[in-house]
Length: 176
Image (cartoon, rainbow, N blue to C red; front, side, top):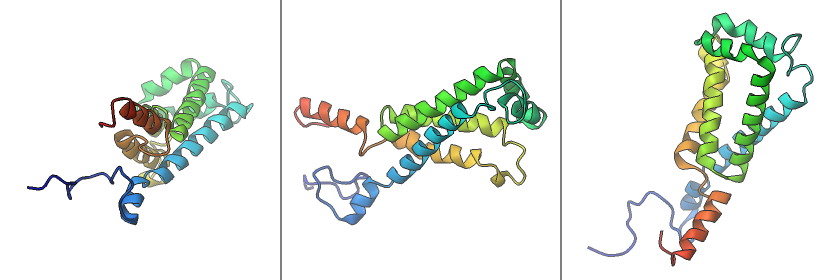
């Protein structure tokens, strides 16, 4: 038995040695992180800057949208909760999307941000896009599936989480 690096290890080498495959593996989730982060920041800002969206009723309002999907949603009780205060629900979704997007882009509490993104996508799938037929025409289910790798892996590179992890490791004398 040798005491070198295991050949069946899952992560790329930490010392910078390795080939392009190790580098590609290490950065594989970065494009997904950027896409989801930018998309959720944009979605949150779009909702907050749309004067019609944050209204209880009227063309393009969150209230009218929720009333239109109530009977076709998987869980009408979720829509009923949102309809108790449509504008408040709209603000909650918009600020939630902003927090998730910023956390994902910065890699700050990345797993928690990804979990929040998955919950937002799940709730939108079960309410707004549930009636899409065939199911793959709705976009919320693919977003939900896209968040899962980030929930599992977090943001291992180019992130505040990774910088904090490296700083803690350095303080402990280089041990993982």
